[in-house]
Length: 128
Image 1: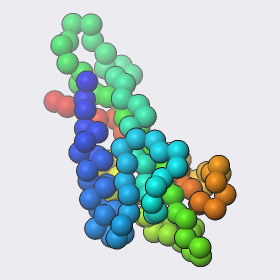
Image 2 (image 1 turned 135 degrees about the vertical axis):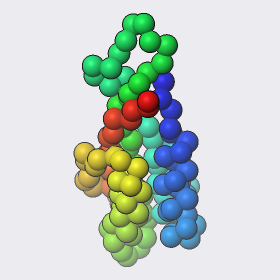
Image 3 (image 1 turned 90 degrees about the vertical axis):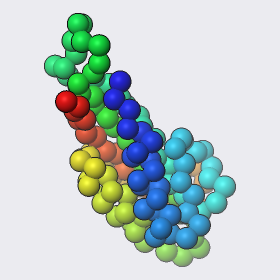
């Protein structure tokens, strides 16, 4: 299995923490963040890339990876603007790592005082 989850998480988390004072970044889904702004970055898929599975090989040569980022903002004013600024940092880091954004939309949150935005990225990761 190709496992780069820690590298992806650390790169995005470090970039966010350097630009947004006090931001919380989680590597798992969070129903209700304890502080804001907050981001959840989760690896949702890590499966062998189509056409690369070998019954005789001991290791995978390529995997399809998918990450989902949920951005949460609870500002009294400017929630959407804050989420967009966070979105730009995540997008830059993910694109620099070779990921393509496949989804980008606001997501209704259970607590309507919290603005939530969801991003999804995919990539085929090859090792030689």
